[in-house]
Amino acid sequence: MKIIFIRHGEPDYSLLEEAGYTGFRLDLAPLSAAGRRMATEAAANPLLEQAEILISSSVTRALETASYLIRDRQLPLFVEPFLHEWQVYESGTEKFEQARKLFFKNNGSLPAGSPVRYETAEQMKARFFSALSKYRDYETVALVAHRMLIRQFVADQQIDFCQFVECELKF
Image 1 (cartoon, helix red, strand yellow):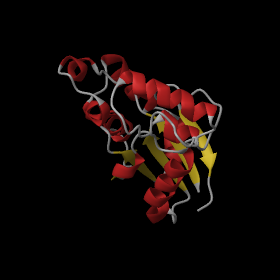
Image 2: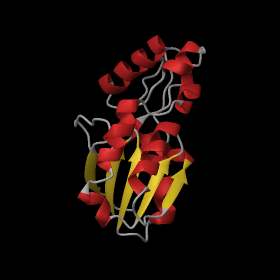
Image 3: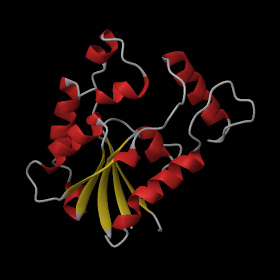
Image 4: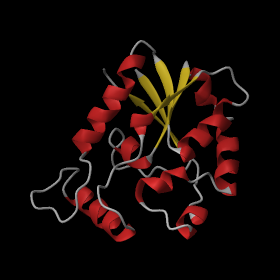
């Protein structure tokens, strides 16, 4: 299956941060004005013409991006809650950054005795394949998701907001 990965547009966390939201509650953040412009421009990407369907993470920033991508097309949209961002099982920006550094240092694995718990690369991949298994009959799908999830399939690549990355995967 050909996957056209699309990273969501730039989010605006300010309102939620001002309200004291942390962790998964930040996933309620909408796109920023710049993120909406990015998504509007991304909707013109000719790669979308190849897609039979668009699948989106249910996280607000991804779903809002998807809404711009399908606005002027007859492209069915499917929402998948298990395509969410990488999970860190402890709250706080410091813990998240510590987990991110450990994740990359340990090539996606969780070392025994780690001071912070997080989802491993293998767990992310398993979650991804489980969520996408029902779409295996499609040849080409566009998928709006998150950088850490996308990086499990296109490693060592910088993935900017609203960037498109093509990938062939076997199910």
